[in-house]
Image (cartoon, rainbow, N blue to C red; front, side):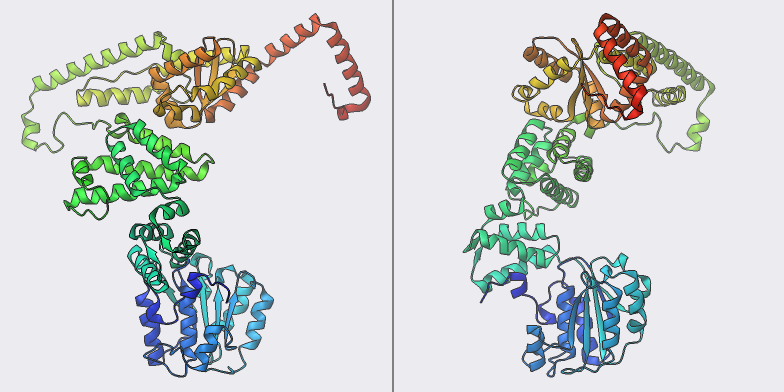
Length: 604
């Protein structure tokens, strides 16, 4: 006999063998025992949760001649024929390939005929949401008032696509995802029956990947058995599923909590090379961080979620806020994976961001006075105190204004290198920042005259574009791979998000893919200094770096072309004057266009 997949071989044959859907199976059994059979059912839920299996068991039970407490006996002629798919009164229809009006009309014409073997004619329409609107309309009347001997069972994974007029004519049962515990228990039972040894950690990995679907779990298990016929091992499960080893995830999480970006990146990159995916690493980090947070908050010493014996002792002193921010950043990285083909970049950005003390420990603004001040204390404030606060406020405003002016006039090396299109602060925002600073009585933060700096930086970018050549740009691109070998592990991610787009003899414009990295690189003089030194080392020439956000680069280039068009045309005319041969060639082209119009295509 040909090999049969595990999910087909071990498909449930009774309601009691359906895993994780006890409420639904008990309701269907009671309906059969009491004889309260509806004319139409709608089974909705995620894939692999037992919808089609329950539909087949229910259809078999309706026609069983020897019911056993609401269960089919699986021994009578009707049950045996139903198991083999040879019972003419049970018809299973795939709506994905039979979704037209003609197929539904054929069903409508045949329902009036009485069953030939059993008591009911049962129509199981799988993936019913795939029916066309015309097919749904053709089914409406028959579904509402079918003959007494007909039962419809509709199954779908996308309930929102089923018209409300169909749903209202059926009894709806919502199938839920199967818990990881139930998945593991069922897989272990099957492996015991098949007399195959297994590793508990491997079964746990498969259950986690299956995400609540029994069919997915058994398919992965089947694939793993093809890889290792006689046993199910943990390492093989990691290779097949693309998950990282749990002990490695623990090490990455500890490195993040210790703010060790280099160690976290090294461990993550090693797991990526071993076959783990960025999505699975992020998923596992979220699961482990959530489990750690629950242990910290609940004060429990439940070690079952971790492998390392002293792991709980290492994480007990970590503040709750660290876990909240880590989980939020990981979810953001998971969302970013959908919009990029370079799957490792969001993971690496997350690891660097989550280990950055500035990102994860932002200072909390505290009021000078408590939030709830009693009315008596408010009334006790005398005029001298008020006058002192007004005086202090005036001094801070004057100090802030002087710093803004001084910083606007001072052109630091960083302001010459960094270009930012949208960081100008309006007068209203500066005033608001001044009020908040005076209110908190803290040392005012340094504020740049961003409008003045932007004008200077825009001129810097224009200067690069005016003198840019392909030769200089190619020189930068040629040494770009060499930089990977000299930068530190925590700095290599910078090269993945930067791209040189224009270069002159002494300056280079680089666009940055992510806003987070643009802000980080713009404020990190040491990082830019290292990159500048390494470029000079390989190219034997000093280049000044100008950073531009990826989303702003095309706008800057377009503005440059528009504002310098006349100057570029003039240069071209001057060049033509120096080369009469070019003028002669241009006259030939002009004459050809006068004769033949715009159809002339000039090729060098």
